[in-house]
Image (tube, rainbow, N blue to C red; front, top):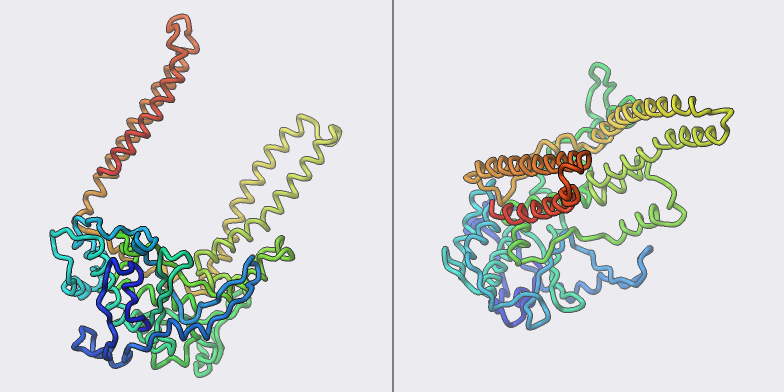
Length: 472
């Protein structure tokens, strides 16, 4: 756990003093950590590396960037952005009052899937139930407990200020020797791909020849995914950076909610630490002038995007590149049609009408075939990346309150009723507008006012809902 003794004093300067934490002994079961976890992780405080870490940093020009940058992405998985006090240029006013700090602390530290996380609330030193407190005390207490959580989970951290001095950044990372990473991967049953060597001892069965991974109909080697086990570490592929991000996020969610820390003003933001080497590769591969007109199509290119950004972004690029290539068919048909229109001998007005109908039918068939073929390609990639199992894992919302489940239904019903009334009124007004245009002699000047009435109704309805919705 790498943190200067006054690390929590720095984000809010001297306006919010925090007791110095010089030495922390190795974890044990007495510290509220399971004995098994304490034995495997053996977490201790290390000397402050915020200054010595400079030896691992370098200032250099990253391809695709305008200015030289300080590359300091060593031992960093997530970056947390803490605001400072106004007296040192930050946005936080230490004298502001927090009306219900205990409720905010509950949202931050209580996890539904981990009832033991409620013990963090018992460690609060200043925040009490139903008692307001100053922003200084609120920030002090929450940040102090957050540091204890990082310490108990075996998470390394280092802190440095922003260039303009209005906030502090905290880099966090699981231990570099991957002992904690392997431990938590096994605890969460994290799915990891097997190595090809893991199949050497498997005998053939049915169509499977044995002693090697199976291949799909496209000739691609597909390895199985299984729940990680530390004792079988030699059978699994190495952890990618995206795996480290996910495991660290899962670990934090068992004890603290970063989303609610942002909502409470403890954090300005948090984000995945960018890696200079991977950024340079992607910039050179896809952001150069030479590659401006190319699309990621090979498996290696798709894997490079997936390994850095994750499956969701990788699937977007895969679909985008697939759709762009498929639209070449529509482009060819459209070009032939436009060229044919230049000569009335080839395409007369009567034939042009028939051709347009034929093109519409062709487009409908093209869209259906496109989605069917992409579905096949999509499932091939899902199989290769092992994301089918990931989708089955539920993600718990820390702010979910089962006691308010019925309220969501009521809100949805009220929203639908309001929308129906709103649409009916607009439809009646439009019907009156059509009637007024057809019978101007009967309605007189009312026909000219319907357009103003319709504009007023739309603005008034939108404004009314903007006031009602927050109260539901």
